[in-house]
Image (cartoon, rainbow, N blue to C red; front, side, top):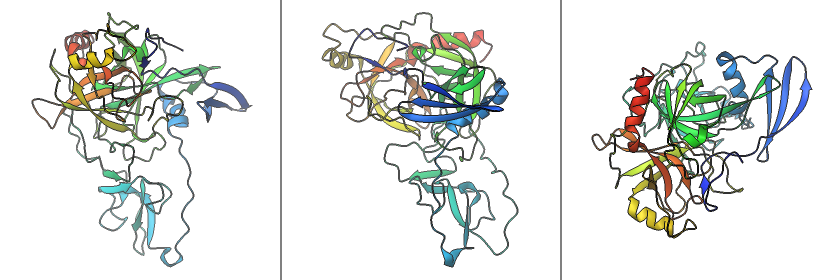
Length: 411
């Protein structure tokens, strides 16, 4: 284990599995590697000479770009030329000759009649259109905290696991770690979440990044098993890690870190920033939302999620939360540190393993249509129990964040 906690009952929201087993399969002009992790086999191929930012996309695609190849439904002999499968955003006004539009998409594979749920069988005319153009992006609202509750380009149906809509939370990022094997880039699965607070700065948990190297941030991610979304994901190398100087790993006190990216992100409808609260702002009584790709349940039976999930989490006042925690194995003398806050405590609704570092966001007290980040996923006792989850209290660190941003000349 790469970390430890002082209480046997506490699980920290940090992906800390052992390195996957690596076996060399074949060597030609490319290196192919077999990764076995958590019972899942990954085959990665990378060139002999590893390059920096320019080749990161190709390496990441081996893991995040892979997707199952479902069989096509049997062709309808009476309807062979009546429609064609095209990306959903290319079908509008009943014909695939129009390429811009919104849709409602059922994420259950096969419901669309095409090989992939992000494709649509679109009616065609006798004369086929010219090759499709790149979809024209919608004007991006560049304010912080803009949630696209209805999705960007389409809204999903058929979800059963609290799936977020595509682009609903544009500040959400996945934090990946690069591992080097014989000078070839290989990738483990996502280690944590994070949030965009500036095009070049990510806010996450210190426990996610302390002692880590070769980190990559992926923005605009939604379904980790496909790259058919309307906007391509953006990957950036982490240039610098800034830990809070009073971070204490034993109890995850002051569990806050900033990641400076080598190059800024390009803001668009699915990549945006989250607002920050005022210093010491009180979040009690607000109904908030936590997002991530973490496990659905705690333990070996839990599965990491393919599509980004959202879970509603009400903020719990410190007094009642501490009393609840004292009834657990933490014991009657447990004290909730001032840098932490509580949320949740509803059965089946919680952040879980793999969600660490991710944002807990709440409607702004000044404008309920905008969101501010209240917390950073830190730790909890189990997942989805009546015991609240514990988050780093972002309002306690607003001044610290502003000072660090100013020192980087990023305001």
